[in-house]
Image (cartoon, rainbow, N blue to C red; front, top):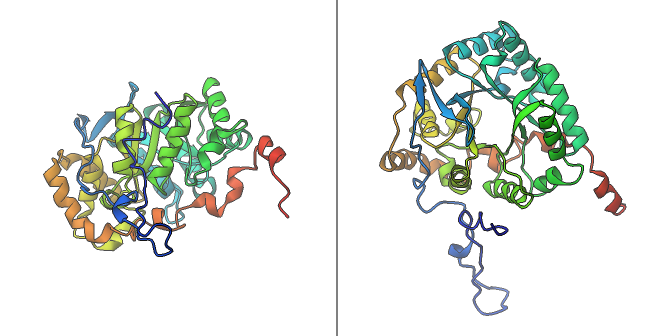
Length: 371
């Protein structure tokens, strides 16, 4: 396959239509610019198989692999919040597993490590580790930093392997180049996989779908295929700078597990007061061809709501999706409630650049003195 050819169907090339030649007042034809807003928000990939129903949960394939994972994933960030006690976090994890949740989300940097520590303790109790598909994320962009973070996560999670490890917060256009550079984080991931410390490799991000496409392109150029990609998928995303429109189709076509997140945007999307019930937000996410929909669960209400969403979920056709998206449209067009796209609120690595690690030796050798 030729370079970039796999992305051409996802992003339409930009063009400027100038009037009056080189005039300073040249007009711009907005229809020639790459669109932030899909012309038909409901033209999304829709789930064809809701999953295998067992007990209270649905189970779906992890992309092209044979693993089956729960359609709902338990978000690690919320479990590590100071508003949640250690005992409550343990109780929620245990009850979630008992009721059928197998996908456990986490990250090296969540709550200064508290999220992983709590999850590790909860999974060790009663030998629950082997009952779940455990995921964590690493911020490091260098081999050295990424390996340190992988080893720290293994220690905190009290396990000798993590099922899925993902490059976290691919937010900048240079992130793919840093990850795949000589001495970059991908070298650490590949070595860790060979050593049995992890099984699958993915990446996450929440800023702009075109950066996800850049990561996929850089991987493609180097002959690497990701096992998973995590991204925001919600009733607002379908209208603005949409991961669902630009990235999801490619993942489905290439057997890469799509991991949905930011269903409620940590509660911010609910503040829009759009005439949509919380359970409808979850139904929308489940109606997409995602392997798992990861949602924050920090209370019994959150846990019960997630299971109720699974219980009542029935695949929606395009007309039903269009009706739901019609209700979200007035609130979604400018990304006001998707702060992860339009502000730095959710950008942990932007606020803590040290998590990424220093430049690799090749960059240090080439870089001029910046004085």
